[in-house]
Length: 499
Ligand code: GLU
Picture 1 (cartoon, rainbow, N blue to C red):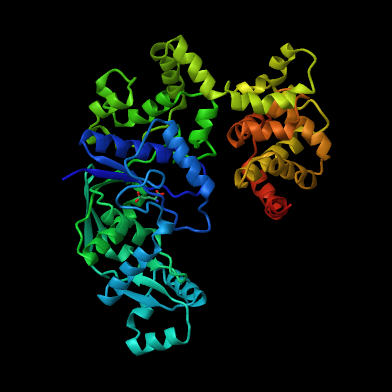
Picture 2 (picture 1 turned 180 degrees about the horizontal axis):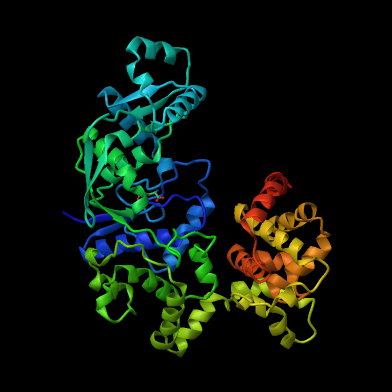
């Protein structure tokens, strides 16, 4: 048997470090066993999936030095590798489940489902589908269909007893069927949900081992059942522990930047980043922590993956990156890393026109544009407050900007400007006055090259990090303030997006 693993990201946002970590573990496992690794795009959530997100996920994984034997960009014998291109396959499989009596059409309208859940809640019961449509006769189903009533397809789930999930690292996990809902497999628009598409694809793509985040453990019973219904052998499962913040909470972008692109913009070497993520699969008793991809493969063992929440320790990442720069790069390698990072023709070509009309000597370029070649700026509060907007109003403006920048589809000069203009109303400050403070927070100066161009070029990750740092320097924002500001944010955010 050839080992085949995969990573199956949903393209609904920035390329998350968690995705890279899961991808790496699957790469290591496949390589260790002389197998193959695939990349599949799981874009069943049509409302949230974007082509831009898919592009940046692939770009980020490639930047880290990962590659895949099959995938949407490289093709392969089991394609297409993007779920939105596989609708006919899922339709056919749903039909099979319906024909064989493992699934049923459910015509329940939202208000009936809401009422049902509410009643279950009042009775102190677990909220789940009550099986109403499972008992419709074929004639009733046909009549509803003929009348054009919309329906979803749900899977049948045993009501009693339990199922045992065999996890390669955790051993058997027993889960009672009473916790498992009659999952919707196909939505009323005829498109599949994650569960159906995931199982069908893992089977058709010959996946033998699934290493994925532990948040999927509770979905495993549904998958076991689907494999049984189809009569297929299930891949071996291993649920990886989620990455954690230093305080052990689930890694979230409120406490640590989570986009791979942020770490690239901050000037971490891809080799060091990959090495850092690979540490979670090395035995701590094993001494040397600096390792290339090949060395990680060499030393990989599932048993080394500690189940007790691995901490995404940025101090360790700094240390490792420093070592990579000093010990693994020679002068030429270092120069080329710097070039890749920012001193390349494309980057200079974008920055130079912004500076050209504002300098007298070429040597003015350094001081004027140095903030493009920096990460965090560590500015003192006095500098941030140098202007007309008082600290409390400014904190609110920074917080609103952080939220609004986060939700922008495209982060560029014009969308940034729209958000910035939209801050005047909720904060009651003048746009012009606010801009001066943002200038300082983002560039370190009260005037520089045009701010919105600069923000667009710096990119969302670095801009948000500098604003987050500026907000923290001014005292951060309390829970109560956040709640109050969120209320102001909702309608205004809508306007900003339209504007
Ligand atoms: N699309 C899922 C995700 O984004 C994949 C889960 C799995 O690996 O089964 O995490």
